[in-house]
Image 1 (cartoon, rainbow, N blue to C red):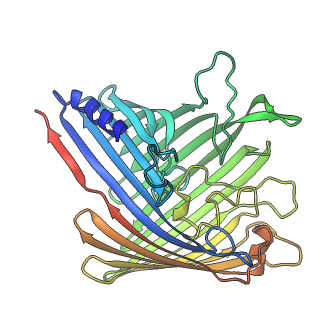
Image 2 (cartoon, rainbow, N blue to C red; image 1 turned 90 degrees about the horizontal axis):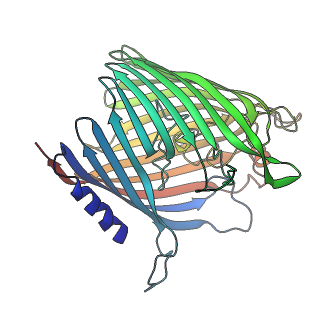
Image 3 (tube, helix red, strand yellow; image 1 turned 120 degrees about the horizontal axis):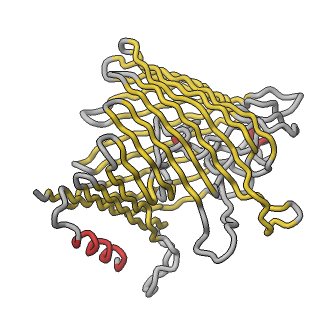
Length: 421
């Protein structure tokens, strides 16, 4: 609370002369029951159950040529701090975003600081809002925007802190980069759009004989495009990306691809959709690096909600073919029910004697707005795994029930809004 108070006072100092100042809250609690979430449920184990919570405050200042945005949050699990503890020892409070955007001319601006980077359907870059902590980048952007044309250039360079000598970056993790550069271009029309993305990510290399000894930087490149295009009531969207360079984290030559095509059609109040996504993978036991990974996207949104693929897992693996269908039914004046079915096969070969079928996942999500700025969501998912799934999930049996249930309350009101003339 002390840090929040300091932040509020900081903004109050700059109220005079500002065009607009707003404060928004994002409070959500999510109960989860996990019995085979993210991976297969093993023998002789018990399911997990917990309540995860996010409390976030967003402060936004907007003037004619300057925008400031700061978001602070606490992400915790109910009960993770003992009673009457004088300090919060779980390090759950953090700075989520802190950036400034300065107008450089009629169409140019620069955006500097900790920020969410999100483009298109969030396959490569996304805010990952499902995860309570979200996803951010410490980066600098040079932005061009004129009517329906957009061009962004992004740059990032990561260090653990101030140093006297060297730039060794010792923070390991899931595709945590030492440096990043990207260019993003988007052209929109009245109902359609087309975008191009070129991304270069650099990772700290270490000497194989001494993993504490820095040995340069190796780079992975991702290039591709995304489009949306309507044909009467039919809406099409798709993407194609190619990854090359050196494969993280093994520092070997990489050649991988992603292809996706989706179609939606509305019949009355019901939305129907079908689609397919192919993510290349390496054959089991092969030394070739052909595994595509959607680096910094909102991966929970894709390939089933149970997060069996590309959510902290499935890197440098056999890839994935995901054939899916969905229907969104209107169950009340504002309530909806999403039903989705995913049919999974491996892209690469698992073994010479097996087929490629991995399993089928059913996802159900009911959404009910309660009052203004408050909604309730309830979800259930079930994975019908094949024996092949156990071959890519560390040999855990596929015979047990694998399901997941959750309920989440989302509250996001605007707490304060003031315009200054």
